[in-house]
Image (cartoon, rainbow, N blue to C red; front, side):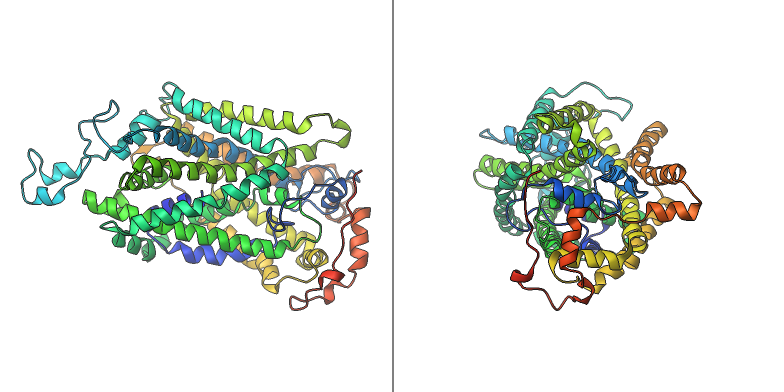
Length: 581
């Protein structure tokens, strides 16, 4: 959902200025993981020896929060617990985007799209299919003044708010379940389960199609969008910066949220998938390619979104920022309006929402896989039983589905916004990333971490990465974090509904449930350790290398002599001997 998030945040943040913030933040993802999920073809089998290697290092923010084989617990293990809490929240509420997309997909199989016309039971008397402002200006539009026409509503917006969401008066008015959307939600969880239950080997094959097909649909929508009247104004609004927005703390936190959520930084999901790669997979190259493709796709999709928004603004005679509320609804307002303007509209609607479903499934696969992998790593090997993974995935999906039922009621959108704003927002992710960088660069040691990467890929990454881990990234993360706390603004939906105090209290409980994992676990480790405070800290932060990992380090003992300009040849790289214990 990178393109939907990109468009919605730009709409609410004054256009394109955040692109520079994205580019400035990208170096921080340099080598955050052991490897990217698709960096070297199909994911490899994840071995017990490989798992031992992970446990041989201090818990600096991965998603293996258990003890290592030596029985030693590390103070930074709290980062692992925190990432699992955050990714669980993401898995819970993010799938609602898939459920809504699936609902639109089902409704697309008609001769006339239900959101293209008025006259349905969910439409109001203010519904207008075509906004003829030229007739209004010439006083030839019967019984309507220009002011009255400006207050009219598009059938696309009414279908989204009155039919799909069935918005109630607020969080305190949950209302009844929307059974149609509930069935779509159930279908999405069933799809996720059968795509994840056998592991990343089957998931990796599915992603080859789900990750490439959306580009075809985006290109078609872009060609159609730029030919619409008013599209140029929308694109200019997208590209033209509004420098006054730089003083708004919410804009900065939105920028951080988009980067961290889009790249899955701090969630442990990429680390989980990367753990299935071979030991000497070039994770450094994969991370850079991932950043370029991710941001490039989001930037490209922004043209599609804002060309359509420009047309809708010209059609309704309002400013672009007033066309649609930024947030998850943007993908269900701008894009559905675009497909109604195409010949054979139901066909293009079905293709688009099928694409949206595939994009959402990609993200959901990664989140569920990351959570399940971390959950199973918590269990000792002696607890293994047949169908352990299948049962664990089923329980996880069932629990999330039960929680999701609160989001398919009449007040479900208010619950969804509560999860989105607090549980996996920029505040929690910035906090998580800050402490990951501190542990990697200052506790474990940036030079030692560079040596580890050189041992894996055969050459040392660019020195800029070390400076990012040590200074640039933690300072930016903490700066934006403090900026957001000082200028905190309560959650508001659609610029009108202000959440009650107990709703905000629930939101902060979501946020603190992950943020407190780091300090509480650190204090627990220090309390259980023996000796003086300095001795306890020294003992807890001393890395322990597993026996199987030492054989790799023995072959690359002089890793400090490697530079970014001297990669080793394929013949001299470490060969991983795979065996099954």
